[in-house]
View (cartoon, rainbow, N blue to C red):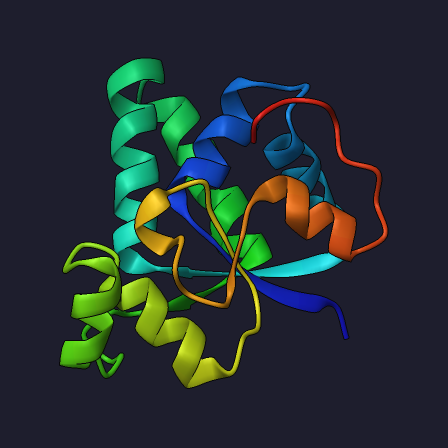
Length: 140
């Protein structure tokens, strides 16, 4: 069974826009089934909204298909978002943290500093290192 990882919206967007970044390598691993993604409905809306605004509905629609084929979807209304989740990462990101904890996922990949203090958070670079992959140079 492939490693499950929650990928935050910035990972999808960096990976889409910058072909030489570590997030793009993670998207490649999703596409080959080497890892299995988990996303919340909020993450999907953020990613697709950005892509639709900047690239149009056709690109957004194709990327939606990619996300839904490579990731398990968690509805934030079904996640038990506790007050301590909100206190740790803020209201916007609390659903992702609740999903990670409810599903027992050990890795949440994000460059968002709101997640910096939670033990599940990995930068794309750190995540690739943990999997024994050589990360590409760069900040993310």
